[in-house]
Length: 70
Image 1 (tube, rainbow, N blue to C red):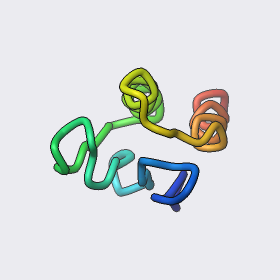
Image 2: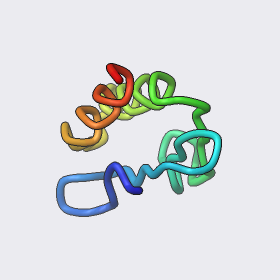
Image 3: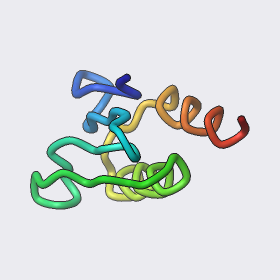
């Protein structure tokens, strides 16, 4: 399941994988993949993208928040 994909409103592509959540071709890591073991760490990672000026859809953060609340 993808939380968000590259596009007009997104500079990140984030999806669920077995054992965590992955940021594909991460701009913070010079195009390498970033794997977070859980939703909380991916939220921190996506907030770092925002702090760097990258577009991160609010809907992706909302989905991660819902997972944390469950």
